[in-house]
Image 1 (cartoon, rainbow, N blue to C red):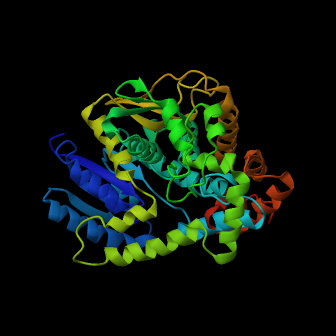
Image 2 (cartoon, one colour; image 1 turned 90 degrees about the vertical axis):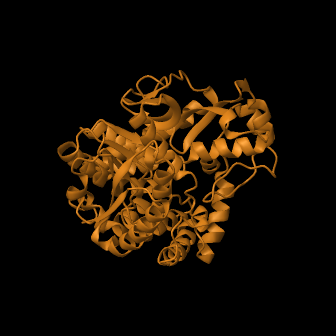
Length: 443
């Protein structure tokens, strides 16, 4: 421990990396990271060097003894790592644009973590994550894999089911965002707010909210029904919730639930964006270009405020908090994607769930939830069926399993549309789906 920690970030050329570096700098007293390895693929070399240079300037300004290494060789970086974080986008933003635009073309919601687009992001990503986990078993078997790559629920599901590397945690900034927003709505300190989260990634509900131990759930639900006080994120239209619906639901939905509870309104908005070329993926592409122009500025030595527009607010808190709590054996409570192990009744122990966990040096331990409310359990189970089938498709390269996964998802509105969408997405992502095209019916 005296030598300090070695952390490896795969997808180090991401625009999110300065957020993570800032988080490590701010926690240096409790998280003595001596080596941060930023790893990317050859196609991402230019961005890696831009981000790496900014990271070095940030560390120099902060005056902490952290060395930034850049690598295109994953094996070199992984050797003897203590923690490995993953924040990849297989196929880069060009692939995300296809994931979002093609479902809209077929009259369905285009979204990068769910529906047809989410399925294909998972199919491209899961095989790569499983390879990384296999490398970790060989090169750093005691290291924790902290995954931030979307679709985080599906990816964590696959890692838990198909990888021998058991030290796996999925993180998401949504629970922290939700807590921050609710504290602001209530006009109280964030530290006084606790939310009892349970469900799946981007399908998580707040079962209760307390301030200093006293439940304020009804008050929060009433506030969320106010059109002027919406709980949303950069990538999701802040469509207002119906107050009567919220009262009847009795739990706090997350911003992504709008895709399921407000499907027609979201689709109508996406169809308008589709015509004008302003889908979220295309907005993000422009933001990325602007951010990297900023990052090139040799006078910049802090995380720029413009990164907030990218949608990664509190990412560093989500990622750094879990690393620090494991390293320091804190025993605090965080909302994470972990093996269920009996937390939520009706979901297999080996499946991934997003729940509050007690985080110690042994890793996160999920807090027992029991049965989910009947109003939400059906949708959660349907999405879990989708995630499990999608993960099996990604591992097997089965066209039939991929078609089944797509059709199971509630955002895919017809099996007659599922097949042509599947075929077109398989074709446009051919380069990143080698296991499918070895067997594909398209050949």
